Structures are given as structure tokens and as C-alpha cells.
Image (cartoon, one colour):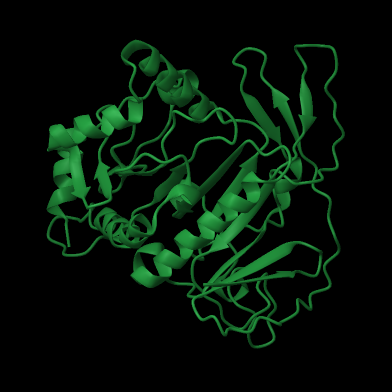
Length: 367
């Protein structure tokens, strides 16, 4: 892999990841972009203790542009985009409309009042373009390209974790308009948070309680239990296992764990990295075959999903385990799982599909 770092016209960083070590990346961004200082602050909810990011400048971000104006396609035929090159393998760049930035404009508004604590939204938000092909998806990538994306995620995890004040790095992909995606080009994002996210904090609390109760690691015991009773196992490789969790929140939800517990992507071994693309691509292709209308042989539309890498925070994450959570908000053909009163109001999920039935369906649609 060859990594080339350059700058966009407004000073944002852009990084090319190329499979070809001889690739030349000397294209300049010729757009007349002025540097922008994002307005971002983080406020603490005194009732729950959660951190909420306030980033009002994001209201102006690009929203469903036509394909010939896609900002994530290469710059071609006189049309300039976020990527100056005429083609690329994998590209990562600083988000033009970030929720978090290294130097946000909002000053620290926190004070002595414990009910109104706030601090600058200092962090980093990056966009990861998986391919130059606008009409492709991650599931269309070759194993070699998927491995290059994994290498890019790993590189960014290492670099962002080392930034002052960063507490957690989150790599993820939103796919589909139903999820809320505003750019159709196949891409994901990376957030470098200045705090540990609420879900990770809850995981850490459960892991600590399990250790105190049993003397063992929660995630190692969890994976062993799923392998011991494989009713919910979807895929099992030499180095990775994918299963539907016992208390799945979403109609179709799969967790993909390396069989060896590691804290984050940087800890993966070469055999683990080599096996990941095949298993992950198979999972994504199965998701696309889940919802087929009666009498049809192909899905009506690609399955919307979220793919989320859970990594240990930079501080206090010794008991946590790297894993990827993949889930869709579609519960059956033509119907979505909406987070209405119970889920949104009380954070108490009700799942319309049993985890065992979901796992069986995901096994049935194997390649």
C-alpha cells in the first residue's frame, strides 16, 4: 500500500491509499475554496451525563446532489470535486462540514454551573471513499480493495488516536437514503471523539461488572457461548466469527468478532487482516439478498444498513473487544423499523424478528 498525503484548496487534509506503490498523486485542488472554521461545541446533559455535539453549521452541507455533481467522484472533464485526481483507489479527507474539528470556532462556554457544562467540539471528522465508481457499493468491491479499505481504517485509527484530546475513534458506513445518507457515492466516515461515547461507556461498565463477578472477560465469554450453541452463528472463519446477538435490537443485526480479542484495528494480525475481506463481503452480499418480493429473483432495492466498528477508547478500554456491528432498519419487504416512542423516548428496543430466525435467514441466503 502507498499512502500519499496532500492538501485541498481550503487547507483540509486529503490522503490517497493506493494498491500500486508507483502511483503518482500530484494533482492539485484548483477550486476557489476559502478556509472555514467550523462552529462546534459539546454540551453535557446533566440528567443522563451524555455529551451532545452542537454543530449548527452542518445545516448547509451538500444534500442529494445529482450524480454528475457528486463531490466524491474524481475530478474529470472540467468538473472539480473533493478529489483532485482523475481516478483513485481509496481516499480519505477531512469533512468539509464536520461535527468535530481540531480548532472549532466556539470558545469554551463551560463554567462553574454544573447544569450548563460545555467545551469546544475539538476532534476530527473524515470521509472515506471506498472506490471511484459512483454506482458501486462496498459489496461490489474485490477482496483486494476491501483489504485496502481495512488498511485505511487501520491507518486512520492509529493517526487519530494519537491526536491530543482524542478519546475514541469510530469508523462507520451509512448506506441508503432510508438511513439518512445524503451522498449516494459509496463512502464511510470516521469520527475522532474527545469523549468516550455512551454506548462504549455502557459496554465498559458491563465488562467491568463481568470481570468482578467471574474473573473473566465478558467478550471472550460471549464469543465462546455463541460458538458453543451456534443457533445464531451466521459465518465462522478461522480468525473471525459472525453471529446475531442474543438480544439483537434490530430486525437483522450481525456482530463480527475476531476470534482473538484485540482492542482496536491496529492490533489485528496479518492472518486476521487477510481473512476479513472475504467474510465481510459475504455478509454484505447476504444482506442485499434478504428482502426479495414473492415471485422475484432479485431484491427490489439494495438493503440500507449501518456498519459500525466498535473500538476501545484510548483510555480505560482494556476489557473491551474490537468488533463490527452490521444492521439494517428494514424489517421485511417494503417495511422499515422506525424508532418511535418506546425506542426514541425510552431507549427500550422492541425487535420484530427473533434473533434465531434472523440468523437462519442469513444462512439461507449464502452465496
